[in-house]
Amino acid sequence: MEKIFVLDTNVILHNASAIKSFGDNMVIIPLAVIEELDKFKKESSERGRNARAAIRMLDLIRKRGCLSNGVKMDNGGTFKIMLYHPDEKEVDLDRNIVDNKILMLAYHLNKTHKEKKVIFVSKDINARIKSDALGITTVDFEKQKVDFDRMYTGWRKMELNQKHYDNFIKAGEMPVEPRSLCPNEYVILHKTGNGDEQVIARHDYRNGKLIRLRDDNIRLWNISPKSPEQRIAFDLLLDPDIKLVTLVGQAGTGKTLLALTVGLQLVVNDKKFQKMLISRPIMPLGKDIGYLPGSKEEKIEHWMNPIYDNLEYILSYKTPDIKVKIYQLFKDGKIELEALTYIRGRSIPNQFVIIDEAQNLTPHEIKTIISRVGHGTKMVLTGDPYQIDNPYLDASSNGLTYAAERLKDQPLHGHVTLTKSERSPLASIAAEFL
Image 1: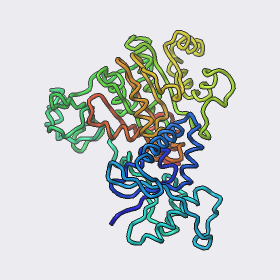
Image 2 (image 1 turned 180 degrees about the vertical axis):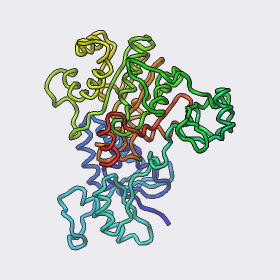
Image 3 (image 1 turned 45 degrees about the vertical axis):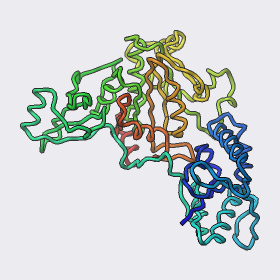
């Protein structure tokens, strides 16, 4: 059965190429969506860029035929723009609300095209609820989504009998089946019936072996790993061959702290990188930093307090005047804060880059940011998929989890999901029970 997909505005703002994602079916955009795209195109945000890209794409399609009659696309599908003014008696919705105009068109098509399956596509939960209540088949935009409940964690547990465990401890390595593990996956080994005694091993994908992690007492800037997962994170962050590290975990698991600690070590002490560049998305009310008072640096400081908190904690043992030390690191150019808005278009060579709160970014934004990496640069993405401020993203569709899952088989990428909160006993129970 041929399908008709009616797209909500937010689908296009999420992915400018969305209209090409429905195969050889018909894709319909209500005229109200075009009007909304016209409003968003003025923004300097990612959705503004997507609005402009979509409008340019629609203009190219327009040149191939009449949009009101339908235009064939390269994938075999048909694209169409429709305007419909239904009788108010058909459906009891406020026609002055743009979302309702879109829904009324989907309702009309569903009522008049019984021979075809009409599907309303939206990333707005409330719009999906209303559409379903009107009897319309309703879906989220599924492209660029992962199964978060089965997401790659970067490590797994393995049980060995006494003999095999003792042999591994003695040899420091053991063979594994080809392609049974991802290139940079870790294994926490323990004896059968004894989970307390354990050792961490890393997959050496080049030689098909598990190699025991050494230097269990590692300590950088007075910070040492408090769990096997944090030890794995340290190993990934310190490995010069891994150019992208994704750290996923709830509040208090140490994602940002570990990344900053290793960044300071590699930039300040080891001088492996020119500087540490730190950025995080600015989400409140969808506004950019421009509405805040002061210079760009002063504007950014409002959103970087969590970074300063972690830096103060890391440096607290080193000097009594922590703020002076932090100021000096910024003044010397060892640390730089940058808004994500200004990273687009840059080429970033020989830097240790940390993108904090990356769960608030779309897969396309993550792709754009990673593509800024120049020679000699290492990038770290950190975030908590349970704390998403972007209204159109969730644990399965955000850029952080998408990147972690999609890149798991790439040797240049390493990932670890941190599960235990180490901030404090109170933070731990809050993360688990609240």
